[in-house]
Length: 189
Image (cartoon, rainbow, N blue to C red; front, top):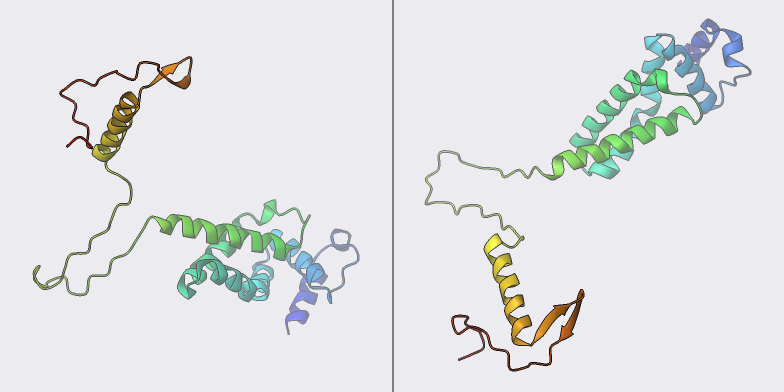
């Protein structure tokens, strides 16, 4: 049935555009269908979708790891392939071009959803005391901790007698250098 439809499409296309095309070769059949789809034949693109949908789904599923997300990626991939079909130059097989679109769409899907973390709330009307609040730990140090760490590094540097000269850390010869009394050193006690 499918080959009969492809044969009908081949008959509609100008022969110089096709050259010697064998319909037994999937890449050649794809080239024929792409040429017909570029001319506006909707059936040709539907056949291309049917031929490649499962493969593109498996590629998307392998990347997104979720069935529903893979379905979304497949839909976006075919939509993008349809809108940019005129830009397809045929330097590679249509399946290669379509697979590359699907991989890019899947990676973009992951990038968009990476920042979104869903927290399911079972009972919105539940009292606040019955369930513990969800705490999301921020692993980055707060500005106060960063400032304190820099301050201690300066104190230790001064305490150990290191100074800057011409861009390099060098030891000073004056080991008796004192810190102001108002500075508290954590190990003095």
